[in-house]
Length: 211
Image (cartoon, rainbow, N blue to C red; front, side):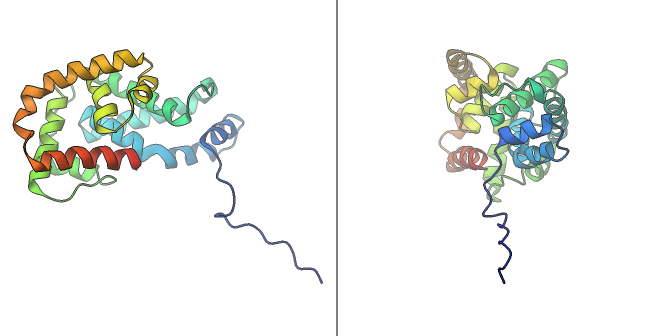
């Protein structure tokens, strides 16, 4: 008697791509978009948190962005990766919030630490203080410069990838980053020789990029 063919385990099945999930969502699959959210919400949250510097505003921006992506999925043309498309929607949601109102500062250091639970830093007082100083300094920049610096310097994206997310030429990203760094340099100059500043910068870029 022949035994029935084995059903491949989930580990053996080829992973469904983001583009395939988006197509399935457009075609009426009720679960496809939830899988996209599950895959990318942590990274989108990291971008929003670093851009806005406020966990509540970041959560609202990510929610707005995913609602927008859900409704506008049919506009995705496949000219860039789904992740780039999502990043663009999240960044635009953040920029809209920054332009509509002044984002209030976060008074409690522990609040951002809790919000960054998906990309934790070692629990050291010096690193926590530096992270808060960098976040506060970023809030002094214009929205377009802050978004460019978050993507390139904090998230570790290439200038070309950041340009795709922001939907601007690469030269514009370079210019915004240069102007932003020039404005931050005198504000953060006292941190340059601190070892915990180096650890914060490198850890943030690597962990957020790879997460």
